[in-house]
Structure formats: C-alpha cells, structure tokens
View 1 (spheres, rainbow, N blue to C red):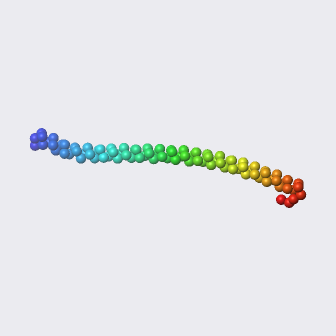
View 2 (view 1 turned 90 degrees about the vertical axis):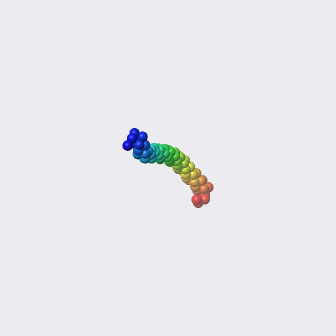
View 3 (view 1 turned 135 degrees about the horizontal axis):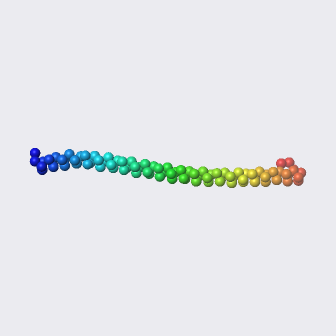
Length: 88
C-alpha cells in the first residue's frame, strides 16, 4: 500500500467517526437547549402563579371586608325596623 491509499482509507474511516461525533454533540446541545427552555418555562409559570395567588388573596380580603360591611348594614337596618315597631 502506498501513501495515497493509506490517506484515502484514513479519510474513509475518519468520516463516519466525525459524523457520529457531530451527531452526538448536536444531541447534547439540543438537550441542553431543551432543558434551558423547560427551566425558563417553569420559572415563568411559577411567577405567573405567584402573581395570580397574590391577586386572589387581595380579592378575598376585599370580599371579606365588603361582607363585613354588609353584615353591619343589615344589623343597622334590623335595629331601625325594630325601633320603628316592625319585626325583622
């Protein structure tokens, strides 16, 4: 075998190895990108859920305050009806 033949065989053998390395490297990069996207999505979802929970808690506090005010108004009106001689 001469040098040209050995070079050609070396190139033929190196090509599949280089292709396999490129595919493996691409898979690793794709996996890392996908995991990064998942973590970003998780952080985004967590932030939205936290904001939604805080809003729900504020709405609940407002509703409880309104309910207490309405209960006081009902008690005041019952007392007024009783003072005017009616039965509530």
